[in-house]
Length: 233
Length: 233
DNA sequence: TATAAAACATGATAAATGTCATGTTTGGTC
DNA sequence: GACCAAACATGACATTTATCATGTTTTATA
Image 1 (cartoon, rainbow over the protein chains, first blue to last red):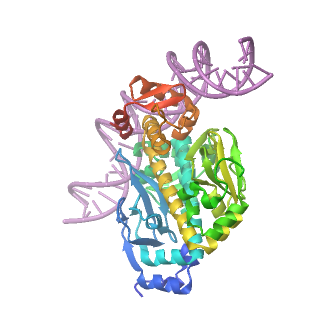
Image 2 (cartoon, chains in turn green, cyan, red, purple):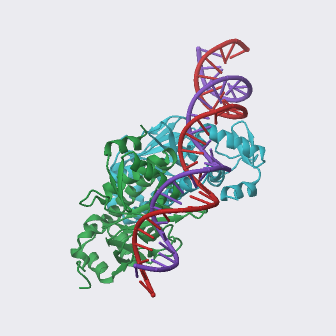
Image 3 (cartoon, rainbow over the protein chains, first blue to last red):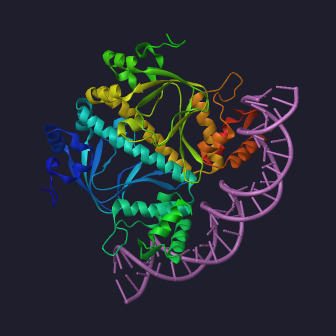
């Protein structure tokens, strides 16, 4: 055992949340034999935009931001991936270089799975292929929704939405603060705005009682008010 | 023969451009037997956001816009689908109601393929599943790129980009005008801006010689200048 | 072909957002 | 604990974009 978590995919609970659960015992055994468990420190990259990926990453712990550098020098965070999610499968399937960079938002534990066993299973096990397809269909829907939000909602609405997204996907700690703490800059990069604008809006939300803060931590204080604002009232 | 184009999928040239080409002869025969060819007039809907789709649409001719209504009452066009593209497969695969509306931008000829034969082939023919997966991976990459553009580029840059997109995907007519003519409102909805802003920018581009217009038709006149503008110079 | 509706166009103005400058707080490290 | 860098914060201002008003042109159709 290399660490405290289960080291065989067959009995790894994380797998239940992603498409690997559609693999047969034998397929999973091969994956488990070839996988490499890695720890990634906060701020470190799993891979960079343009890299050729030789496998996929299965997140056991921690959160990764998937982002793309725009020509104006700003990073746009397209997605946050956490426990159970698989990163890099799009590039592996399309046989393209990575379109996004993946960076650890906090300390992570991930399993790197060489692409061979994945590709082979895709080509031979329709259940697995369809399961991957379902996940990608879901990602595509989410991406379409983000497009609509980006173009049709104000920055204020998007910041409010980001807080609900963080609450729904990562939960709250015992004091009611969002469990995933992002820097103001990262929030700005999720929302697609300037860091200063983001900070200003957070200040305003605090002043109006929609949220509370403690250092970098943020808690939703007036759920109803924030939701109304998010929806444009 | 119900019309001038080939009425059997097996010998339909359109199929070469989409994932149906990965089907076996037998599978394709079943699809062909169950498909229904429809004509859709400009402005008519193939389906609406929220509809439950009982199959997919294969575009033989014409162009469809895939759009989503935002809470502020504006339509955001997420994608334009033309000859050879398949519409609705995301919803069918995810077994969800449609996330987008599909509306004919000009007169269309489409084949409706009931989902049963598609789903069955997905579950039994890994080649087909992987081919669909590749297409969806490509769509997802494009969607991610749109997110970055929407959030990080100015409206002017996005309008310029839209013209290049139209040129690259739909070509030009013999006089150099973009072959696909969209209304100013549709362009605005692709770009994610107000119709007036879009019209103003088109006027400005014309004044500066980047484009020429003739009625609704638009031609790129100064490719280099427009490209520089698009990239932020 | 007369007529109404839709699409296109432009000005005036307000609102939203970005940028630059500057100062404060926080967190890590010697 | 002193010190430095990064993150956070806010003001002042410029720029971008949306909105509202109004008029013109095009298109569809009775």
